[in-house]
Length: 97
Image (cartoon, rainbow, N blue to C red):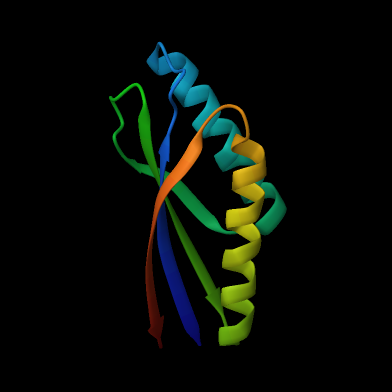
């Protein structure tokens, strides 16, 4: 069994309030969770207006499946953020159980 966790750091340049930032982040988290059935949550920059970090965890019996899912998630999030925010960093971690 394989596990993969990764963190995506997002910059939201037009955010003028925490309410706007959280609406963008919450929307991306909800849509990603519903589409891919992964564990996901906001983990850093909680009180900053223009930044957010979202952590993900994937578990699978096949290593190939994990990498495919990660790639699909990143592409999906990039499209969801289009015009609202941008991904500025992706940090990966992979383990075999």
